[in-house]
Image (cartoon, rainbow, N blue to C red; front, side, top):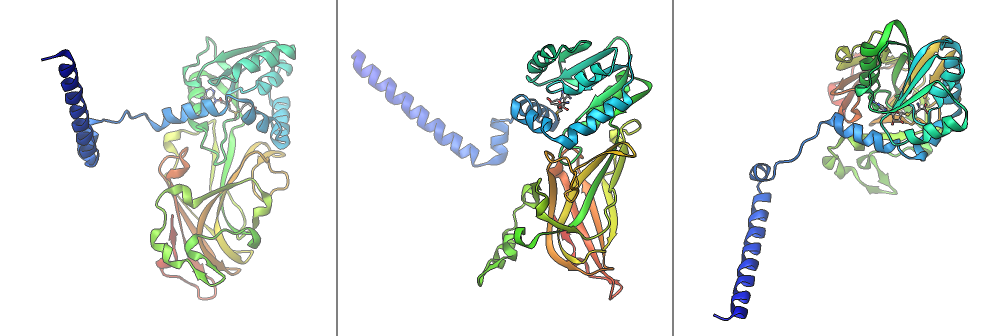
Amino acid sequence: MSFQTLQHLSASAFSAIRRLLAVGRTWIQARPRLAAWFYPRVRRSPKADYRNHNRRMFAGFHEQERMLADQARMAFYHAAIARHIQPGDRVVDLGTGTGILAAWAAQRGAAHVYAIDHSDILSYARAVATANQIENVEFRAIHSTEFTVDEPVDVILHEQMGDGLFDEGMVANVTDLRDRLLKPGGLILPSLFELYCEPIKVNDARLVPFIWELDVHGYDYSCLERDRPQGPGYYHLVSSDRQLIDHFLGEPRPALSIDLHTLNEADMPHEITFTRTVVNAGRLDGLAVYFRARVDQDLVLSTSPLDPHRAPHWGFRILRTARDDFAVGDEIEVRFTIGRWPDLDSWRWSYVKRVFAQSHPVPPENSVIA
Ligand SMILES: C[S@@+](CC[C@H](N)C(=O)[O-])C[C@H]1O[C@@H](n2cnc3c(N)ncnc32)[C@H](O)[C@@H]1O
């Protein structure tokens, strides 16, 4: 057999094998159980995924400049540090970013400030501190869970709040440092937080109803209700636009209050129920999720959508509900179940409407579950 014939035969044989393998792979991939056995997925924990996402998100200038330009935020931290960090304190700035809170603590006379961050922004923080002649700040490129010190610290300074308060891992990160490195009686700045989930009416001109609620010049979309999206993302809206919300239906009250000095993540509730009596009549369009952080009675940071002094770089989240009209005196009983607090996609909500005029609950089919 000539060399060329041999080459031709082996090329055809290899190509037949490749085709056969491709057919086999398609056949296997069409059978999920078999596919999972042949091609096992590399599974990473949600925590590890979030850590990578967070590190990348804060590495560039844009996220940092949005935070630095938020005047309400920066005024809150500037005042908190001026009031509560004492000369001689040993401080950890958890997630220092561009290093500004650490620098302010050093300027207050802190004996030593550890400025730690797991993101690449840290090299710029070092440069800015040098350019501003800041001393007593020791920068460490490290994740907080791996950070240790020889001597306990007096203060943990942090800004770890996400739009939904818990979605940047604040509770786990701060309480881990608290339990390992904070002196007994030491200070967490800030430590008091309130989470709100208030029934709201959206401004008529800005309302985007569910598609199956729409009738656009007589073109009716109600048949799409059977195709309701299953993924949780569809039921959330994020905005920082104060014009979006017309009013709260009830009097806002915290759905959850925490103090990071005493809280343990494992003790956080997985179910929350509360009732709002309607004081401002109107259509219920959703539940607005926002938070307040408090350092002193008069030193509060708010992301409330209706607060003219709100810290604007934080968004507030609207958890959408079906449109439903409420009169003054009606009650809205809201129920949340929470899979994992930091994972907003694991939150589920429903409500029951109690009509004041009839003084009996409307049947459960009026409750909405997302
Ligand atoms: C919201 S920014 C605050 C930045 C800065 N403290 C400020 O007030 O401008 C949070 C920073 O914490 C960092 N970070 C988040 N979780 C961290 C952790 N567990 N350990 C170290 N750094 C963390 C992020 O990379 C980011 O730079």
